[in-house]
Length: 512
Ligand SMILES: Cc1cc2nc3c(=O)[nH]c(=O)nc-3n(C[C@H](O)[C@H](O)[C@H](O)COP(=O)(O)OP(=O)(O)OC[C@H]3O[C@@H](n4cnc5c(N)ncnc54)[C@H](O)[C@@H]3O)c2cc1C
Image (cartoon, rainbow, N blue to C red; front, side, top):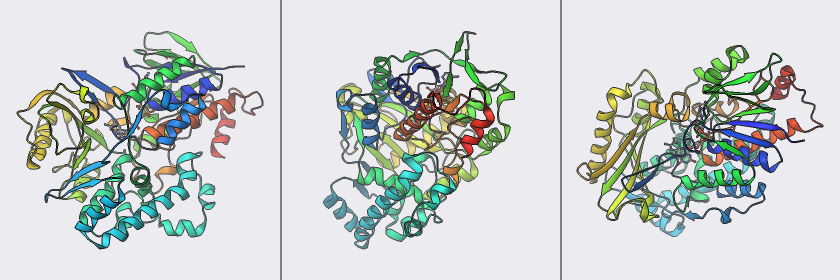
């Protein structure tokens, strides 16, 4: 018999879980506080410009195909995913420009000009990250959350060759010696909000999904992904209510989630509740205090957060053929930049600046003769180190001055502009301190410390999204949605040993 599942939050993890639950025959209601679905995947339309406000780099094409297949549909009937080429154009302070491309011959030629030895090193690095993906993928990305038992199942020879005790940067140094390439490869740490100088070497796996597999762009803009997931969910019978904030998860005396209470007082009953909201936010604001596992709350809220972002949406007069769809303007001192973020808790003095321009692929995203720049700088999660309200105008000037030093002075060419700080991200999406990817991945143990899919104390309460396993990033939260949906379906199955209200049993199952 079908169960009613309430999903709090229409982020990509929530929508993809809703799709899988509906495809499995459950009755699903998604409640989203914002006016539109998508969460961190947002879009802004203004003055003839269209910007994506969150993700701009889409990898792991197969994860999207898999989601549509699970719903009995074909991805290509809903969305056109175009390969992006070059993947990213890198600009260095010394004037070097490097296009990272799928064209191996062109890539090799550019690396040869930097340092001939690095051609072999780069090719060996690509093979190392492919091995990382083969070995760590099943345990850390595609399956259930890792346990120590999972790790012991990785062949010893493989495990030793991966050198998980090194940092990402230390592993990269074993392969390439050009400072340009080292900085470029280290940048993948930021894809999960970490620092290459602290994150474990295993996170070099991120380079595999981009350099070996490629980047994709959905025709129409990244937000097209959120829009088609909403469409597919509705086609499958999911009820989606936007502008509908959940105030509290209702927990029975037997410690079971029995529904939610909305901000306007309306109550919705459910057999299971899935929170797609940041777990720290869910525990602090949505769960009644007596139901909260205080040990889990302390662990999550005291953990160092991943980095956040400072964002400028710029409508720029003029066209810039020297720019690609994705561009990076590197700082001269990468180590200092990450020290600013993670040690001093302040936005970098000399930031690396990222610019994505969807008008390069979809010219109608900007008026003729203009471009829509999404400018992103890594910043610390909101905290006592920096007052964004007082500092945001000055920091915006600093970012624009940095671009001017690279010959891109657009300060008198801005016809539209919006600024988002880490505090804005926290407000808009409910992310803890505005962190983009949950807890910091800078520790080798981070993958083992993510909150479990089932709440340890409240039966029938589940989590999906970037703060849970396998972590942040669009394809990853789709995988988290798959895991949560599968767990709920299993628990709701008639033969399931899961008994309603038996929180201690839930806790034992989580531990196993
Ligand atoms: C600036 C930026 C750049 C990024 N770049 C990339 C990238 O290039 N590639 C990539 O793969 N990933 C990127 N990411 C990360 C990616 O966007 C996220 O990991 C992913 O979208 C998070 O999805 P989620 O399922 O965790 O839900 P979230 O996006 O966190 O959504 C949670 C939803 O819950 C809603 N909500 C909160 N509280 C309530 C409540 N009380 N009641 C109802 N609803 C509520 C929120 O409004 C929100 O819609 C980026 C993120 C940002 C912000």
